[in-house]
Image (cartoon, rainbow, N blue to C red; front, side, top):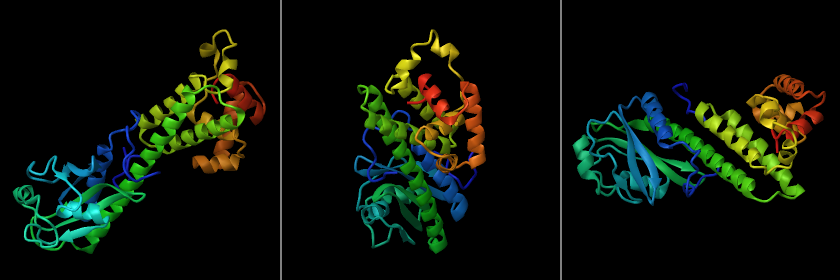
Length: 309
């Protein structure tokens, strides 16, 4: 389970990528976790927000509300407090929503039914594009204050980082899949694919969400099984490759994928956020399982078995 002030693990930003990959989890879970963190850090009981899609903000996630009056509300840029924040890409607060003169009042009816008075909204900005909005609100007119705004902004930054990582995973998985369906690449492109494969495994290593991490590693395995890498055909020469193939752990494969790129133990450790001695131990274990005695032979054997591109 994630700690209270960390997002469940798992950059590129701007508007959401079209056609999100099936591997990508619903971003609503990250927004829900952000709201739980926001409530804890700000001390404000009512927090809510949502993602931007089809040119508008949709309020879908709520903590501490008393009614469903705002659920599913579609907020367009420039309208209401949320629309003001989207259009200007900066936080904004009002001490009494309904009579406020600095915003439009397209959404007064659902706000009145919820009884909201003081409210602050902050954008979730990913590399220059607003991807959602987080709100904190109270039912009296006492200003929420700079500390509340700062805490909500920090939560939004953390959420933006999570979304950026998910975008990057989407991008790399799609590149990997396209490469896997392409004809066997020439040598320079094969080097690029090996680099991509290693980097994708490195991203998987950083993801604490067990299900997402395993699915990402399985995507790497499917890429190899498709025969996109040179070593895949060599593995077919064995009588029963699936039965005889050495069983390396995900961490051993992570290390080998960077060794295959020519990385030293220290460089692989830096990519994988491990200690060099830990990398050395994984490499030693992998070479033993592969029945070889050097890092270079280990890479060659892993490629022969179809474990690396």
